[in-house]
Amino acid sequence: MQQLALDDWLALNPDVVQIPGRDLFVIAKYLVPMEATLAQGCLVAAGIPAVLADAHLMQTDLLLAPALGGVRILVPSDYLQQSAAVLEGLARGDYALDDSFTAE
Image (cartoon, rainbow, N blue to C red):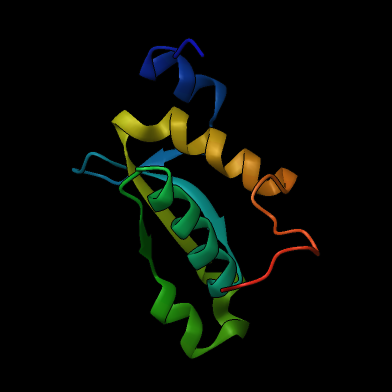
């Protein structure tokens, strides 16, 4: 898969914003902290250094989550395109376990 230049990719994804003064970008937001943790786990498993922001704040009072913007997932600029692909796969169900899965 050919990667776009960062500026071109950001122009195509206006919802991805940079944290001021840092090389971290908000790649996704979730209103439910557990969903954010699951998404972060998929990113980390794919080798992407992803961190959660505001997860503990959202867990204190879920009714405030919409007003505060939810849990943010932050990734460095070098991983933006790869992380977007992983999150798209998660949304499609690519990482879902089927009924035949058994934990050993």
